Image (cartoon, rainbow, N blue to C red; front, side):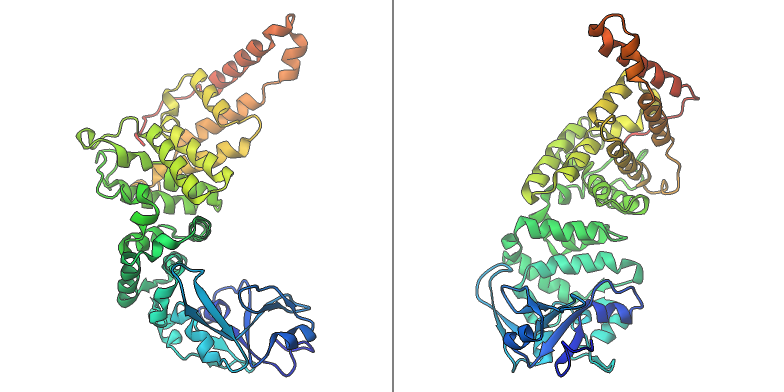
Length: 422
């Protein structure tokens, strides 16, 4: 924090950097609060102002963020409806008081002394996510952040305080969640999916009543039964939570985890008379994926992988029963010859579906390896050589197709294994 640009300023390291250092976790970025300064002084010292709603500045050398101490006052619904007041008389404690959780309302001074006006250190030790003050209820994004922190710190044993959960329920009942903009919901969801236990994000949202407002397609899966012979966990909602956590173990790609989350959404629309089976749920899942992606304006690559996984995960599970022509149709549908990475991502999501069942967590997934073997074989077909040897140009596509089918048939020659329902 020292240097010509900051000499003489009253500066504190705040928020996540302090929290993570106390938890002995890596610190990704450092944010600072400056008390007693004005924007003109910061600019004179070489800082660059980047905040429009409130004064935030980038250090001229480190590019770390330095924000002037500020307070906030609610004036309208939603998370944009705030008046911000930044002035030299705003104290550090007043600035910390506007933060969401006690574990984020920590500061560290120049000498390394921890400033903890709201009991954040005690809550770190107790592994509790607790709101700082009733002002928590003024910003619905904080519901998403609490759920995300539950996912991030699940391995450390953190839980949401009862009084914070009760406050979140009151916020949902008051309609605050309905004021969230789609882009912010997706941003928090994507961050949560990148954590080691993403299921906790959705479980917390469900417990406080926000999930049914934000993702009704997912919320509706709880209480929907599946055949116990294939799904010992029975409940479709519990299955999807197991799947998304399994996907987190198999892949760091958020696209894979999102596809795992969405793969069975269509089971919520199965007529109860057909329970516990779900014929045709793949097509219904594709429709539900389209609804979710449109609602949150999900990036295209996420939507495409989720749609393909929803449509074809059952087919992949039955790979050992498929004809070469069906496998070739699958490869063409996922655009294997131009986007081979997409097939690999879909197979990881399918493996998460297979292993995301009670008692199946450590089982092998030979179907995935068989598809990979067939994909490698079909990509090795030399289309140029086939075209050069063709006597009639109009027959080249048929010749290439036959060669690809032969390659798949050759790769598929192996002992047959039993299939599983998705």
